[in-house]
Image (tube, rainbow, N blue to C red; front, side, top):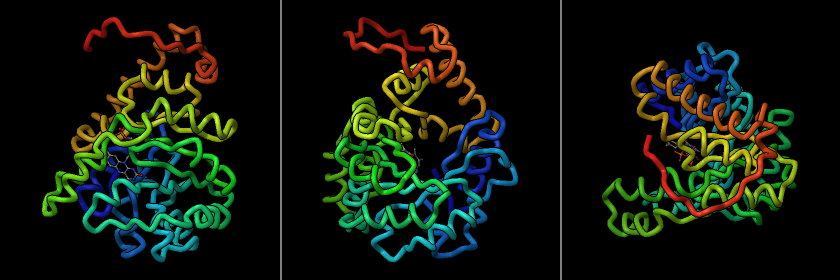
Length: 283
Ligand SMILES: Cc1cc2nc3c(=O)[nH]c(=O)nc-3n(C[C@H](O)[C@H](O)[C@H](O)COP(=O)(O)O)c2cc1C
């Protein structure tokens, strides 16, 4: 979720130490600044504390229209010692940013070029909170990418975050009006899975506990990702992050137990039916 400054370096190391301790993957924050100034790679550097973690580098896909080349992507992955690269699609965020770039045309071919250049290193495409549709998944499926993270609506809203930056009343209003724009996560998982039956589908966007993780897996996700619940702990310590990951895992294990799923693969075959909620006790 971050990088580029000393404060974000501390956050990255807390996240990485916790990921190593708990055996989960870690996705670093967008690293355009590293391409502008390679010395900043240090603030994303976590390999020494997370030698076994599946580590993703991250870059805005729109940068591929603004001078970033497949070679730059390779350089970034090498500099950060990452195992894979996420390219994020964030048209809503960019349109709300006063300095945003909205040149999203022609990206499919450029994403395909990055996937070809980095092979066998996997390239995945993600949204940042507005979800991915079946139609977009169908376009991306043939680019050679390894998978899609849906990052659907219902969790962190970059439109809303950008609206709090101030300085441009028109853009701030746009951000508020579009705060909940997008395909809800549960819907996006199903749309992407329907149009790409054998691709990696990572569920994210508002996943806040192990029960929601279990539901996302039962809807067809290969894996689950979450950002905001770990932000406060990441400012404090690796232990705080590890503790929160532990809660997710315990809750997910309990959901597996209660649905007679011995493995996550079995959970994917659990039957999910929509019924009107009666009550929910707040934990
Ligand atoms: C503090 C923070 C920073 C984030 N930074 C990035 C980023 O650099 N690149 C990216 O693709 N997504 C980023 N995200 C978005 C999430 O990775 C993700 O797409 C998603 O919507 C899950 O968010 P949630 O669990 O917070 O709802 C960030 C989210 C948060 C909360």
